[in-house]
Length: 228
Image (cartoon, rainbow, N blue to C red; front, side, top):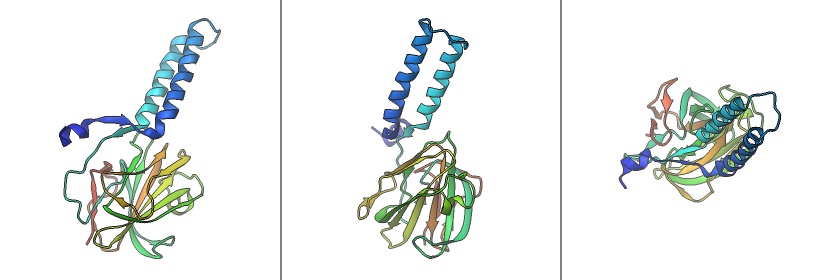
């Protein structure tokens, strides 16, 4: 199968399998019960239409396109998520680097794909999780006060890059697959965030930025920066 054909395939992410099956059977039982005569003030057709719409949105949320980055990955930083660029600025990073870093943030709405990819090739140096609040993900304080997971990757050139998964107002579960010491690659999934969230990427000062504020990104496809 060619790369082009693989890019067109879409599957359901395994994080949503249990929820989708259980939701399907619950909605099916409710609709069958109403259809076979249980009294309800709401017309059956409205319940059926609502059920289809709700289930369709859930399936859409857990969709997981099969993507392969078709290019040279040396010194390239790829968008780890679908969404929109909401922050490009220099910040003081206090959890790992303890110095000044360039931060690029991608906000994911509930309509975006919520699988997260590794932004660079390399070796996982550190994985961490911090409990926190569930403020709206696009707020500046969300990076340091919301529930979040951190993955630090050292590239083959020796540059350390951090990707931080951040929960939002609706996101209640962050899943991180990275393990310390393992090799990671751009085409692999780093994790998954459920129901609206954000991913921050921390890069060395002086890194060439390849995106602009408000730009839409495609996970594992959009080049967001080039390392020196």
